[in-house]
Amino acid sequence: MKNFIILLILALPLHAGMPIDTVLSFTPGSGQDFGHGADVFPENIFGLPSTNASETVPAAAETDILSLGLKGEIIVGVKDYYIVDGDGADFTVFENAFLNQATEKVFAEPAVISVSVDGIHFVEFPFDSLSLAGLAGKTPTHGDQNPYNPEVSGGDSYDLADLGLNQISWIKIRDVATYASLDEDSPYYYPLVMLSGFDLDAVLGINIRHKGESVRDLSDDISINKYSDYLIIETPLPFEYKLYNLAGKAISKGTNSIISTNSLHKGMYILQILYKDKVLTKKLIL
Image 1 (cartoon, rainbow, N blue to C red):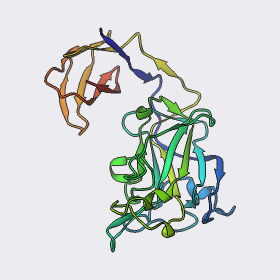
Image 2 (cartoon, one colour):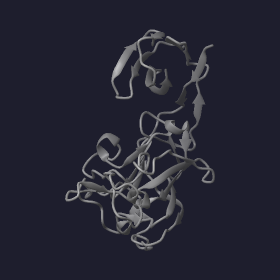
Image 3 (cartoon, rainbow, N blue to C red):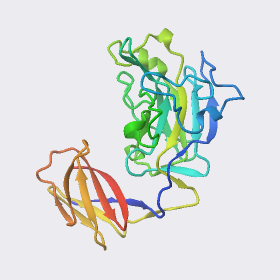
């Protein structure tokens, strides 16, 4: 039996990225009130991440960061814009993590990231409390690099496709700094007494769209039919495709509608289709 995978495309092109500019709520945690003053908050978390931050030098001014405190939580967004599922990562969260050259460990005070369209119902990105995989706050900021390019910017980036979401309005950041004290062998380990909560520098939406614009379902235009040994791409107009493995290597490309998969190992792949001057990206499990 064939499975149909419907691709979504934006009716209008995505806008350039944009920093958050709205706070829906902030519930401070315990043990820290750095950056809470009305003279600095919330402007200290709006705009781009600190240009002074580097792998070994964290942002440290109240005008640059907001400390959530232990178990603190903040919900932020971009006014009048959705963050949408586009090509690659869709938003990046910047904390003031840094590499301690003496211990060769990253001082990380992590946070759980979850997202929502309505600000009420949130979907959480999966994470591991020991390795800190999936958590924000563990990657130093490279303030001298392009903040909208996750490959060089530092910070921790997230892809809405991992949750099966097309768009969101709100990002919740919930401190779980104490997780950094759970595993003494972790490259992020620090004793509990040294941890005081996630320090938020900035959040950037990479793929955004004005809320006045709409998403159009192209189920009548393009579909992928998946069989055991091949894929069939159906479109009324010419297209080009590239099939990538998770390492980012293109393993197949062309303009043909039938793609053989019988020589591929089982696993996840990225299919990219150039169609009507737009690039569509879809994760496939083969």
